Every structure is written in C-alpha cells, then in structure tokens.
Image (cartoon, rainbow, N blue to C red; front, side, top):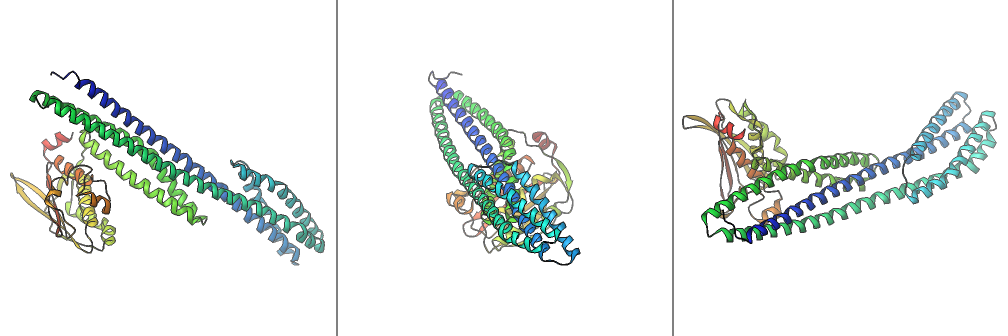
Amino acid sequence: MQIHHRTKPVIIIGFSIILAILAALASIWLVNIKANSQRLTALVDEQRASELIFIMRDAAHKRALALYRMAILTDPFERDDEYLHFMEQAGRFIAARDQLLEQDRSAGEAQAWNAAQPLIRQGSASQSRTLELILEGNIDQANQLILSQVIPIQNKVMDHLTRMLDLQKQTAANDLAETSKQNNAVFFTVSSLGGVALVIGGLIALFVIRTFTHSERNLIGAREEALRANQHKSVFLANMSHELRTPLNAIIGYSEIMQEEAKELGHAEFADDLHKIHGAGRHLLALINEILDLSKIEAGKMEFYVEQFDLNALVEEVCFTIQPLLDKNQNTLSMTGALSRDVYNDLTKVRQTLFNLLSNSCKFTHHGAITVAVSEFVKDQAGWASITVSDTGIGMRKEQLEHIFAPFTQADTSTTRNYGGTGLGLTISQRYCQLMGGSLSVQSEPGKGSSFTINIPMHMSDTALQQCA
C-alpha cells in the first residue's frame, strides 16, 4: 500500500503523543490514588490516637472518682471494691499511654504531650500518696490532698489531652481539605490532557481520512489500522481498569471503616466527608467496571457461561431487586406473561441486561408505571424468549434513538446533566444480546415513554457459543 510521504510520520508522531498522554494520565491517576491511600492511612492513625486519648481521659476521671469514694466510704468492703476499680482504671490509663507513646505526633501534639508528662507523673505520685493515707486511715489528710493536688493536677492533664484532640481534629480536617484540593487538581489535569489527546486524535483521523479518500485500497488500509488501534485501546482499557480497581477498592474499604469509627466516636463532621469520599469511590468503581466490560467485549475476551435456568424466576428476582429504585421516583411495577419451559443461555448476562433496562426505566420515569412482559415465539423452527420493559417516562425523539446504543452516549447532554450515568449500560446490554444470538430493540415517543425488547434464543446455538469462545 502506497502511503503519502508525510502521512506515516504524522501518524507515528500523533499516536506517540497520544500514547504519551495516556501514559501520563495513568501515572497521574495512580499517583493520586496512592497519595489518597496514604492520607486515609494517616487519618486512621489519627483516629486511633484520638481513641487512646479518650481512654486516658476516661480512665483518669474514673480513677480520681474511685479515689474520692474511697475517702468518703466507711464500709470496708465497699472501700475494697473502689480500690479494685481504682487499680483497674490505673491499668487502662497506663496501657493507653504506652500505646500512645508509639504513635507519631505532629510538632504541636508533641509539645502538648511533653507538657503533660510531668503533670501525669506528679498526678500519679499524689494519687499514690492519697491512697496510702486512705489505707492508713488518715481520711482528713487524704481529702486535703485530693482537693489541693489530685484534682488540680488532673484538670491540667485533661487540658493538655484536650489540646491534643483539638490538634488532631485540625490535622484531619487539613488532610481532607488537601485531599479534595489535590483531587480537583488531578481532575483538571486529566481533563486537560484528555482533551488534548482527543483533539490530536481527531486531527490525526481527519488527516488520515483526507489522505486516503483518493483510493479505495488506502481506505481499506485505514480501516484496518483503525480496528487495530481500537483493539489496542480496548486491551489498554481492560488492563488499566484492573490496575485501578485494586487501590480504589482499598479506598472504599478504608472510607467505610472510618465512617463507622467516626460515628462511634461522635465525629459527625468527619462522617459526612467520609460518606462523600465513599460515594465518589463507588461511582468511580462502577464506571471502571462498565469500561472493563465494554473493553472485554470489544477485545473479544468476554466469557459466557451457558446454563439451564428458569427465566420466569429470574424476572421476578430482578423486579424484586429493583424495588428501591421504583420507590425513589414513586413508580409502580407490574409483570405479565411467562415461559412454558426453561432457557439454556447465559443467566448472568440476561440478568444484567434486564437490570440495566429496569434501572433506566426507573430513572427516567416519575410517578409512572413500568411493565415487564414475558412471552415466547417460534423463529426458524426454534423457540425464542422475549422480555419487553415498557414505561411511561420522558421518552425519546427519533434522532435520539439513532445513537441510543452508542457507547458513552445518552439521549442528549441535558439527559446526562439531569439524570447522570455513563452511557454504557445500553451499549453493553445490546452487545450481550447480540453475542447470545439475539437482539435488543427500542421504541419510544417523547412524553409517552419507551419500550425495550430483549429477544434471545431459548437454546443458545453452537454458532453463538463459538463466537463467544
């Protein structure tokens, strides 16, 4: 194939720039995820230090209270019980203090901690002396010592520990603010580089198309190059999705743990921010999973597991699962029809396709009705199953229907803005139906709702199985 003497260098340079941008995007993303993981780990350590300080404060308070009760109680058995309680709280205080000594501290926290140490030692000595006076029967001297030394020293220790808690709270707030700031910066950088890559890719595609329009042979060659590039892109997306999911799952897990700890410790202001982090991580993980599924399909690596199952039971199960989405927009759901026999196909893919269609109907329908109709018919002397999901939602125009199954596409920009979503659910669902030997079609009118129909063979053919293998 003859190539214009300027075309090949332009393609090589352009794709080199695009690959360099993609590598930079991956690097920036991974570095940001690592930094977020480190910040979350630091927040967990701060939470543990705060917990130890709370234990010390509680133990010190209960220890002083037990000492005071020993001084006023006359019953020897009750006094012995308070003595045992005093020793138990002293043990809690010492254990928490020893663990806190092993924790890393900021300069301000270290200053407050160092200032508290002499007071802690002095307080322990005065409490020990008070305990000796009580055991010797010198109650008046013990009471004087409690009022003159034990309580004032304990109050000062409490002040230093409270200061450490305030400093830790400020540190955690600064870490969360820095994380948000860093994420915004990364988002801007990734968006900018992605835009540059898209522009460069668009310019290269335009240049290639204009160059090869003079020859049918060159057009065929350009198509083959584009298909190979698309396959490389799919493989790259699949690999990147795998690499991104591991640290992202860690972030989601840590945020769940920290939400529980924040609620237990009464830090509602932290729980709200952690809930936002957890929600953002979940949204990003869902996007990555959809991209992974689409890239597997495009790369021909999607695996199918064919089995015999009851389609009627599957439809009922998905309809039950979708109930929270129905309640969110106050919709009603009804089911009609049934199959007379089991289906031999991929249960997971059928379930996911039906779930995607019902999720869309719930999203785009408000105070309306959704219907799931199951039926069967014969085509080419073979049994087929049909599932139609109809709603009374916003519907779509004819021009919108033309690209409804295109990846990363929704009906229009207002749909994405008002309802959210990645635009991959219908694309993946249609690909699944096609790979199972069937089809997914749609009928819709603006303001009257939409109707999506799944048609799949009751027994997946050997040809379809070979194409999926």
